[in-house]
Image (cartoon, rainbow, N blue to C red; front, side):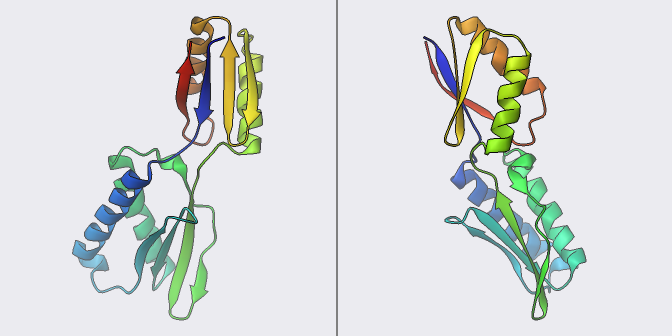
Length: 163
């Protein structure tokens, strides 16, 4: 029975390259040249730590980071900018989470979208991915086209296609 998996992941090397490029731009920008702080990638926690003197410069760091990530080919919705800024001494810090895996709420929404489309496929959650199976490959391709048209709030990749 043909099947494929729906996952949401970011290539760690590409993410690291984007952050290094953003750091390089940060050091060359005139308005941010003498600022304390910067941006750091925590690979284990899958987060990016931004720090600067005030919230206006944090916003500038976010803009630089987002443009560099998009230029590297990573979807901008892979970053979660909803965390609040925290004051830490003379610096303001913000932690940006990198989304990895399809969470339960998004998974339910994706499965509901697939079932509402009336395409003859079966979709089921498996940890942080969704397995979709059908009798015909054409049905699977229709599901992929459907999910590419809809906004799911996070980037989706379609992997492990088996026929």
